[in-house]
Every structure is written in structure tokens, then in C-alpha cells.
Length: 449
Image (tube, rainbow, N blue to C red):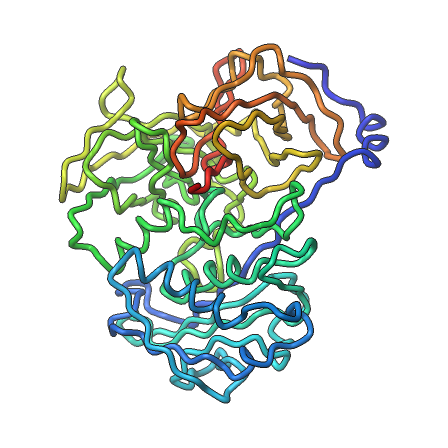
């Protein structure tokens, strides 16, 4: 444990290190019924490539493979679920207005869409239209003409393929994920954050795959866990909304699927293959907040997890704290939580001299110093730091305070990644001496070799 850093130390440290937040993406769901498919019913989906893709504006680095990036982004989703795309060409450059669709599923990079991004720093925007039954009938994707893009990792630009992979997820009906390593997490780093190209969101995470298969390949032999979070305030039952529930594969430690509780406290974690899992529940008050998950007309729209509660391991089989899932099953797990505002609240992570709210891309065999910033993180001792995979380990005697221009304490410690670690997203777990725990699911992402 450490003494809390003074404001003077934090200000002086501003010349030494940096806080580099990722930028949020944006999706607009035009008015739709509360219930319905909320996915495409037609297959293949006709996608119109705007003529602007072949003559991109100046905000896209010259020589970038724009059409190739679009095709690879589409293919990444098509490869994991029963989704096919049929490509056409269109001279249209602007997406449909919110009042009515034009029947064209457009992907455009034209500057003619600049008005969509007034007052917004989102890298792109996807607009989705539904029929009266809630099925998607049109989706449009536009890039922000005020943002810089490339396909070669140029520092300070957004990776075009990563941006498009995220937006295609919205195009298909997926909302944001609170798993930090997911393509559908709401924060995208620019190239150069952590001193690295920002390519990780090109590769779909297990959480992305689970959500896509739940929508488009529901008969794939996978299972789900569903239930409700409730609490009691002044003798009255209350639902817990905007809580993050996620599953880790016990065998690998991979974060494999997740859900956000609705205003009625309901959640459903889909896409689970038969196996043994640990289930976790936490408030959305960390690097990804409830406001990042919500979007226009979304059932997940909210500002905070309400009522607040402390993170916990959720299980119906203590002391093992794991659940065994068979094929084609729907396990019911509901939880009563005590309303209690967390004291331990990690807000940012980092490495290579920078703090951010995007996942740390690590490699097998690597040893590196990582940082965590947030309320009460300086109360965490060495035995309170662990990871969801045994192939990722804390290096003894490496924990120390770090100086950053942040409004809360920052700790640093070394992490050794084993050569045998599998690709995927892994959780950093923190625990204070008084037993309070906090999770950073998907904070470490391992790319395929």
C-alpha cells in the first residue's frame, strides 16, 4: 500500500508521462420497437460501396487500401457467423437522414457527411433503421472527415480497418461491449498509443464472436446464462441496471462472453460453448462506463450503474465459484446485491509511459511494466494483484507508485507473459486488504502469432 500522491507531484509529472484516452465511436438507432429481432433477417446483406472509397478525401492517408480495409472488416464478421455480404457500387456519398432510410446500405468516407460529426470526436458513425417488428432493414456507415486515418499504422491516425470492423458490428446490430479487448468496446486508440500501431481491434475477440453468433447462428450448439440483478433499498426491491456480467473460461482464463443488465435488471450472456466458466458482475464505473455503452434510443442508455454495488464473483456452486455449462442449455443465475458504492475503482491502464482506457496489447514471452490508475488502487498490495490466466504472472517485488497527470493514485508493476499463453482477452484483478475486489476484463489482449 502507498501514501496517496499529492497534487503537486501529479502536476510536475505531466512533463514525464501522458494520459491518452481512446476516442468513443457512435451509433444511432433510429426509433424502433422495444422488442424484435434487432438483426438482419435477409441473407446475404447487400452492401453498397460509395464511390468515395475509390477517391478518398485528404483525411485518409494517401496510398491507404480503403476498399481492402472495408472488405477485410466485412469478412471478419462473415467468417464467424452465418452472415454473407453482397457488394455493390453506389454514386451516393451521404448516409440517410434519421427521418427515413433510402434503402441503400452505404459505406462512405465522403466529406459530405461532415455535419454528422459537429461537436463529436467519434471516428465514425453508424445509423441503423428497423421495420415495425424490430428487424434491421438498412444500415449506413460514415467516417468522420475531421479525423485522420491510415492503414499502415501512421502515428496519430486511426487504423481504418479497426474503425470499420467496429462499425460493421453496429451495422449488424451489435451494441458496445464493456470487455476492453473487444472490437466492439467503445474506445478506439490512435496509432502510437503505448508506442504501438493500433491494430488489435481488427481481430474479433471471443466476446465479439459470441454476440455475433447469438444473433446470426443461434443453432450452433452454444448455451447461455441469464437472470436478474436486484437489490433492496429502504425495504423495497430495486433492479440493478447497467451492471456488467461476463464469463471467463476456467481452462484458459479467456474472457469469452458478456452482457449489460437492462433497466429491469435482466441480463443474458450468450454464445457459450460447453465448458466450465467463472461468472463475474461489476459496476460500469471503470475505463468503460455505462454512458459509453449506451446510444441513441438504446435500452442500455444510462449514466451510471444504479444502484451502485461492489464487484463480485457470481456462482451457484460455491466454494468452487464456477459453473459447468452443457450444450444447448440456458442456465438461470439471478443475484441479490447489497447497494454499496465501490471504494476501489480503477479508471485507466497503461504501459510504455502512457495511461489510456484501451486494452494493453502484449506478446507471449514479454515482460513489461504496466500501470493502473484510480481511486484506492494505492491500497492494493502485491498479493492483491492477479490475472485470469496462470500464464500471466505478477513479478514479485515490482509494485511501486507511479507519477502521472491523473486526478487519482497510479500504481506500477511488472507482468511476465508466458510463451504458452493463448490468444484472447484476459482480466486484471485487484483486491484490497479489506477484501474489496475490482476487475479489468479484457485489459490484456494477446494477438494470434
